Image (cartoon, rainbow, N blue to C red; front, side):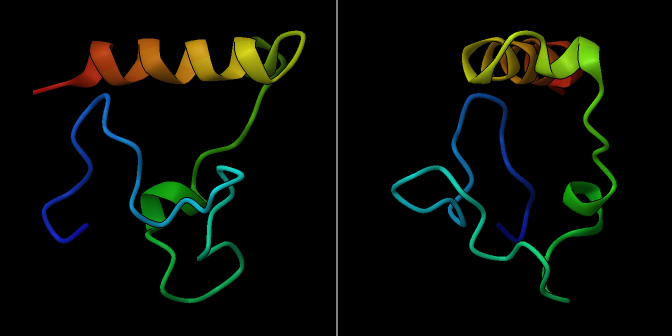
Length: 62
């Protein structure tokens, strides 16, 4: 996504299972590679993590 990913919009690099197609590849954006999961982010599972990411996107939206 040349101009960045807007908040609330899924990344175009996610596959049908919501997994990054660029994971482990040099083309993966630095911002994605720098994201380090923590217990606060992951919580009790996938739903918690997705809610946390949505909150972060809203909190940092321009």
